[in-house]
Image (tube, rainbow, N blue to C red; front, top):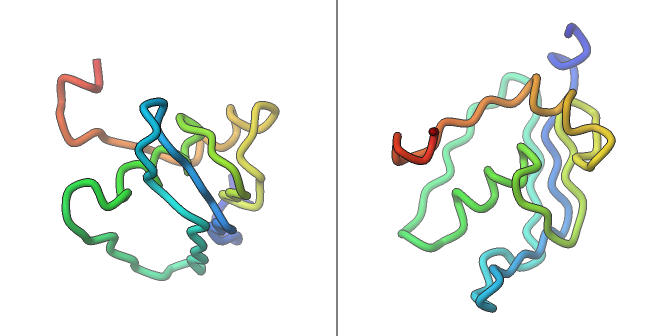
Amino acid sequence: MDVVMHHTIEVEKLTFAYPDGHPALHETSLSIAPGEKVALVGPNGAGKSTLMLHLNGILHGKGRVCVCGLEVGEKTLGKVRAAVGLVFQNPDDQL
């Protein structure tokens, strides 16, 4: 797992809308360097949780998401999820 510590999180032009048509992310880009501390802040419905769900491969939008040097996709989900932990806001959603 040493490789995990040497890569960044990169999101390039990520766009996502929920099935009801509600747009959540529009061409969102983000790059986080190793050791960098980042806070995602904003009002309810701004897309913070939606972005995090893309980093773990739970949601799939249009664009590119890389975590630990791996592009998040069907073939890499196991490795990505081994490196990315996610705790939901509502504990009942964990179960």
